[in-house]
Amino acid sequence: MAGGKSNTRVLAGVSIPPNSFTRLTGNEFSGASDFSGTFTQTTLGGAARRAAEATVSINDKYLCFGLQAHTIGGGVVNYFGADRGGQMYAFKPALPM
Image (cartoon, rainbow, N blue to C red; front, side, top):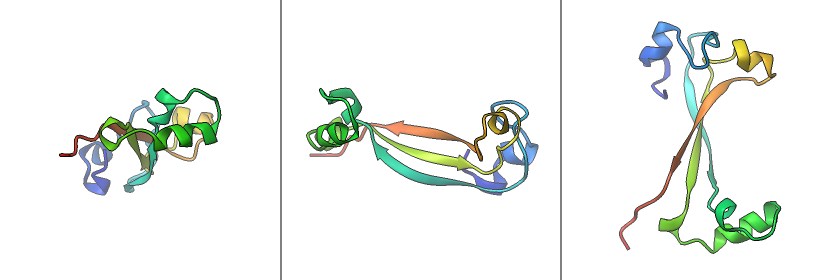
């Protein structure tokens, strides 16, 4: 989805959810987050999650990146008051140790 204005979906004016495509423009990766603490924390709260994340080794982490889709702003996206659609990409590192 991050092909910008040359993305074939953008050029065709289609989107998911259906009928949410608004304009021919680019998309951008924006933000990264470590959400491994969500699976290991024993106390609720943001500070507890951050503390739990610090105890997880890099290859056991779950990380995600956000993609802002500036092309998606109509339909259900607009109905719920969001400024644009997008996707979240999650991955688990596998770095050589």
